[in-house]
Length: 433
Ligand SMILES: *Cc1c(COP(=O)(O)O)cnc(C)c1O
Image (cartoon, rainbow, N blue to C red; front, side, top):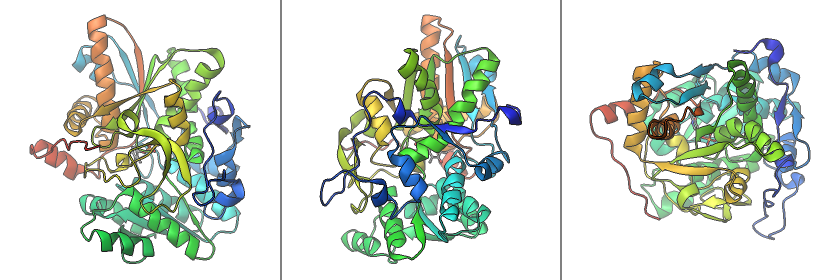
């Protein structure tokens, strides 16, 4: 743990140091690059500004946000001795435990600043989409903390798989609607085309954006994908950098699971700064599900961020905005696209990606629970599986590599997923590209 005086007071904006900057977001109608004013119609103005900032490497964390961060930060950096021993690996495995906060995932790190900026700018209502519910839960909490009303569209299938997450959101005072729903035009259109549509992050984003643009004083917020979200998440890596230094180690390999890229970027970008500025060699690995493999099997092209095509066009690795991800339990990883920063970094060879089958992810999660005594979120299990693959390679080579991975959340509200794995009911849905 870090002392209060050691807590980072700025976020790191990797865009400023990137050699090839991410390509601009485009207005789909005109194909013109978007300006901050255009984004400020749906997002808080400060977030819109941060989104397009390719100039300032360091951005001050507002005092009020720092105060809230102090409720649960710093988060622990832990060496996974028991896991190392169980694997018989010479690798040193560390994890940053982002499950230790009132909501149980890293999402709270961006929910707090987003709600803070909305409040500052005179917004009264916030809306969003959520998959498994971690983002919705984090936003509900942050909205309450800063006195905002909150409406969440939750992916229908995830709402059924994880009913307790909607209970959490409602406990913090949010309204929760399953998506696709009949409450928006986008939702009605999707249901008309496909009455049994299980919902996806894409459908829920369409509905939330529509609500934000049709409700006065209401802003849309996003828990992943966007560059300002990864910016807020860099608090993870900035702390980890100091903590690794205290441990007297430097990572050879950095691993995080990948939905839209925020926890990956959050841990990786502060370290990648050393690659960009000093040529440090670190193996950065994003772990995605085999059934939704945009980084390993997608194309780099302009695509919509949502199913209905309401968002700007984003230059990213994508499986296509109409791709329907299989109903895997890692709801937070069921997204067709990827953040524009990470997409550019992958294209330029600064990082790589691996795809992990669902059963391998749960086998890894179970081993982690039984050794490190923390039940990981199904999303985080992908990072653990990728870590185990790397640690096993070290057995063959005898290398004492230092591997750092992000434990993005705990799985205590995902126990139906563990039940189905333990009962032998879990399958590996095939990717149909
Ligand atoms: C949302 C979520 C993810 C995936 O989102 P990223 O933006 O890729 O980090 C991963 N793990 C947990 C626990 C989540 O809630």
